[in-house]
Image (cartoon, rainbow over all chains, first blue to last red; front, side, top):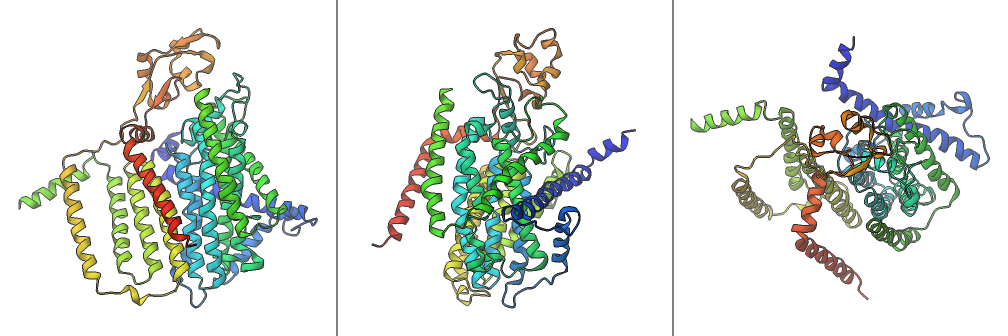
Length: 345
Length: 242
């Protein structure tokens, strides 16, 4: 009866196709959900308006309408633009997002790859998107694009440092770089001998969590860190010359990266796919795990988007000062304290 | 004739079942892309294009490391070279001469010299590599060594897969009872379960790298750190003209 299932899973293309499909769902589904729930609805609520209401019940199909609109538009290339680099840039940004989701575990056996270097690999590939942004900024042959690209690169390089250093505390405490083992370390952890809720690292690493969220906000170039696309100064930064599908790709990239970074944050600090009260080795988590992750992603992104809708934009020098003079020293201190406590306990 | 026979036997070895054919095909594809991009890096007259071709070459190196099962080195390659050095290159190029199109000043008569140096480097490094690793064999697919010291554990703390794999050891024991999993019992487990046994330590790739950096190579490691710090301070001093 189960003959064809075994054949399917033993073949090369079966599991590979399944993983590709899973990767698309894991990247695009949170992105769509974030755009509708937060960008359309929560933002409207914050600004005392009702947001899109016409397409579908409560405007829930607005997203499809927007995608359809983008597909109908002409794909414009500026006359002086470097055609090939201009065309490839959005794909490089999106590629970095898809590489990021590879190492995120969604259940005891529900993962794409279980790399020993998990989180380190994720931090490494997240830096690839800078190349795409610089490509877009340069190839557009427009001064706004170039300025936006340079601002974005300076910001992303600066904030990568606190992002990496904030993760260090978790890695020291868990004693591993493997994402799956970080989840298990939290599930099997104990708070002074009491293992009722495990030991989600947000409790011991709340400094790291706060720094990770701030650095993540800056990496996503979202307000209050949106100088690279500051519409009052640079029109739309490195995206100025893009239209149609390629603009849509940048747009998807921004929100998909927000979702994937939130997944990584929930794995590192909130216990990932695990919820207290159920054995982490239970097969149940292969089915419930993705839903649990989705819930935690919604929580983390709620914080990010709340900040986004609440605070006005920083100035460029304030941005760099916040990073180099506050976030990096605090995260270094956090590493030292975590290291000392790890040895003591 | 002997050469042909040699090639044929090499080819047979490469396509035999002992060698992963998929891995060889992947290597060939990555290597071809890398060679083409490396060639374009030095022949294109557009400086930004040269930097972007270099990205492909460096990404290819990272892919080869991952293909060899060394994902730590591969990730480091991406983080340091693509994420930092190339971004700095592009940053510098765009701040100074972000012209679109070809840059005629890149063409110069010193190309012959560059080619000469390149060929010399290839010969020297190629000879050194072949001389050193001629008879070396890589081991693939071997499980990571897992160290285990038998310790007394509470049954309640033992993960479920271990409980299920060793029903005899835990038969008739409650959650609060203490038990010691013997070395023989440990050895009977598969690696996926072994790594979950309390007291087991996976001695994987990362641990081996960390171990050698912070014991055998601690002096060079610290020396490089101090050198980088000196370079950093030097750069600031040179840049700040008061």
